[in-house]
Length: 139
Image (cartoon, rainbow, N blue to C red; front, side, top):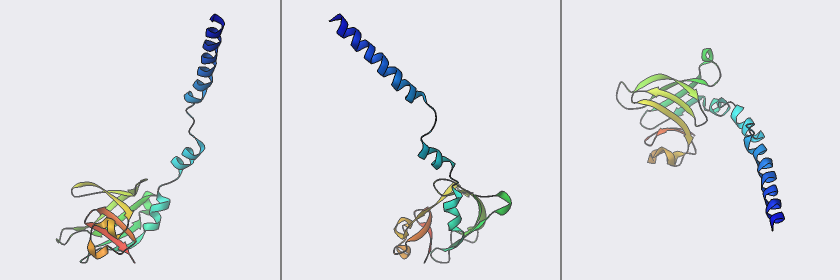
């Protein structure tokens, strides 16, 4: 009985040591390292150009060349009031383009017409959404 207990303890110690080596490794898995180092702007660079909203609303995205890759200028009419037009600086993230506008930080992300929450854009497939009720699409 004593030998069996010692053998069991030895097995547990060996097992714990071998698991400890893999658990303590801080090196990311190869897929994770590639994903973390991949620039976010590769996706958002495809958004450069004009996007159309409803009732005269629009979004024009251009690269902010002096700021470098992943930086954009968002010229937009985002509401019907005279003061709801402007140009905002944006930066690529994994989720889309972050920018600040009245009301605080905003996120421009990809979606479809249904995600805009507007019946006039419902059938569109290539859209950018700031929030439900504010979206811009391409044909």
